[in-house]
Image 1 (cartoon, one colour):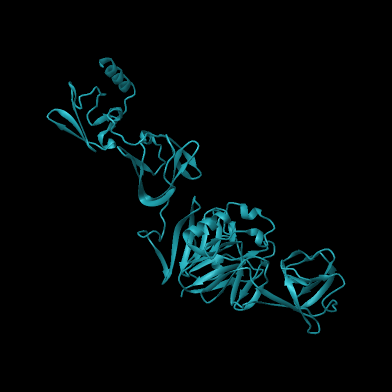
Image 2 (spheres, rainbow, N blue to C red; image 1 turned 180 degrees about the horizontal axis):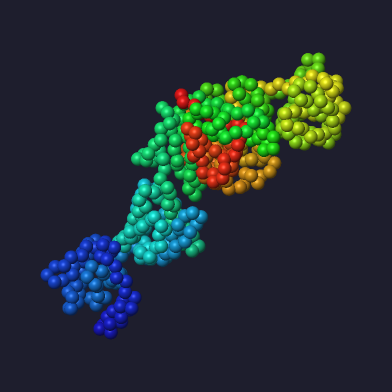
Length: 493
């Protein structure tokens, strides 16, 4: 028995881990020359120079307030199984991995704390005491009978966590994100009011990676598409006096030709290009591929239904510069309302012109150079305002990002990590004009859905993605803001 106790003592002494009594869930006090450690149903008494009085065992020696972890293990103080721990990074997260003795019975969980966060693991995890917490974050560890309590503190920041189990081998993974404060959300942070029912916010959506959004939220106001085809300017200069201005739809970078539907006060400024559009009257919004009826009026007043751009038909009107028409077709090149040339397709369409293509030798009516040819179109139903963007991100509370359903021939811009601009609204009707930090449109769609968006549409990205609030640029793009052709402007109610 004495030999066993000696061996036990030597093993403790060689691997002894001295920890402050509070770290072990105990209180320390000196009482009649003895050191007393008490709490959680345990009372330990050590008399310096004599040894342990309670319990009467050969246990490793404490040092004042500091008590050997091994002593409590030997007494059966800990009821939770022990787990090893590793630390690392995952994207922008600080990752903690617990190596478990058996499969974790719990399910994934996540949450966020303002400046602090408390987590309880049903395991003994002494390795957490050695965690290399990132700058700005501190951790307080308590090793308790039923598990380990971890208190994290990051003054002035938000702490977002995601905790989930893995199998083969069994692990429990904790991802921590240290985030800058939000503006306007959650309650308790500064809210920047712009006008009654209109406020500026900086919030985080989760994909599950955190994604910071720069966002204007409005319950009402005058909302207009602004700009002039072929003329480029900063969004703020397209709407002086606006509370907020978000970049608009696509345009040809060489000529400033708008690409996609643009309806201004009931007048068609630019024709559809086969992508989703925002359409609205007053403060009632709709998203989707626009139903658009177009006709061409001939020299004698004849009219014929035509397709437009990507919505091809037997007779198709083209309004975007570049190669238009197909082999086996002819085209009438029109400037203003006069035919300038009749050419075989594909033909080069210059900016400011449009073209009508048709099967070779089969125009909808006799045509010659100099004839009058006019293009007319209208939305069905006839919304007062519309602006095409795309792709669709969220549709009626569901993830809707699917560029293959829209006229996006080059997928690379939609795969690039860059700031993204979007317009969205909640089911209650609150409008969001927003720009994200660099991400992909698909990730933005997931983040907006998690944040509560009911519908959402991308409005370009990269250097074009800009949110101006009372004349000040709030979006995170590091370069010089790009001049654009159109924008969405929100004026005070």
